Length: 445
Image 1 (cartoon, rainbow, N blue to C red):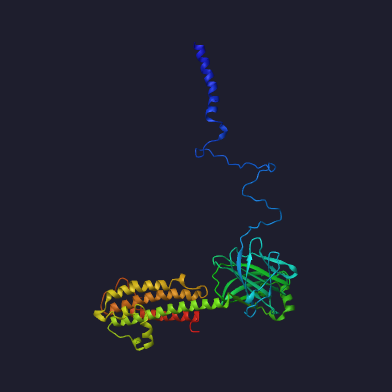
Image 2: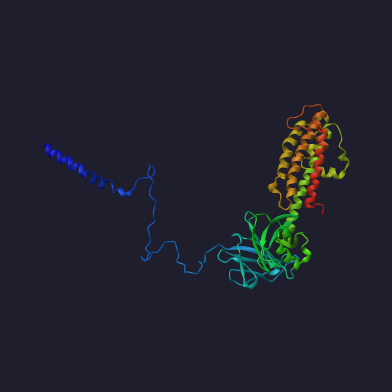
């Protein structure tokens, strides 16, 4: 009996792994991730090319052909100008799309072209050479300038300029140029796009022969409408003696050590757009400066009333008429005099209503085309900040004149000057900011 029990126990031990294999499955199924083991990478099943099975979602494309939906098309508004800024109509341009024929300027100098990643814009160069222009994959506007009689005796005699800018200013544009040069191969020239005396974009181009071409991406920018300048310069101080001698042989008059510079007109946008933008800029700055001068004069008058005086500016009917056009004029001009001065209303005006209004008008995000006059945009913010400082100084002087304790929101003046002197200094600063903005934006034109 004992012998039979031992044999049955041994058989059970031997059969236990086999039973577990059937019940739990093959051990090659792996383990669950997260238990300390690293799961094996998933391997896609190999497709037998001779099995004749179709791959879902993939269309067969013959070699050498481009699928019809390859690349999304972008529309570009094409404008063409002459070297004098005039509109050019019906003129063949050194441009083509893909391997197609040349593009011509449209009626009244305006047309529309479509490009895609499969049919790119090409600039046509000498000897049937085509230079692909990598326009951003966005729709936009492309201004072209053609030079029928390019200038001579310059670093680069430009025949064509293309300036592409997406409608979305968050994306970069493209500037491309073709022309001729007599500078020796290997010479470098600097190219800059300027406007209103400021350098906005550019780069370095290397000369590799008499036929000159340059293609470069421009920085994302809200390019305002108007006339820019394309400047090309060569610097003798950075050239080798051999290059200087060769340039001297061809153009002796430019080897005096100064930079050799040529400039070309670069119209951007149609004239109507430029005029509209100009009007928006002028109207905005004009209204902002009126807000400052009206507020300043109202504060002057109200402060004088608080001290029991009459402001001299009330003798000027033009300033009075302008001042009374402010929406808070009635509130500020009816505060009373001396002890009857309504300080509660005064505090509400200079602590809440006026600063809220000035904050909106001085917001840099709402200044139209602020990049055209960056100095004026910055000065406008400083102007409104100075106006707020002046309001608190005017209040400080009024409280002091009436023997009242200075309010916690009012300005603590420079102790070397005192509030009265500081007030005069701030008024002068307001005037300086106004003059600088008017000069920058040419509001007097």
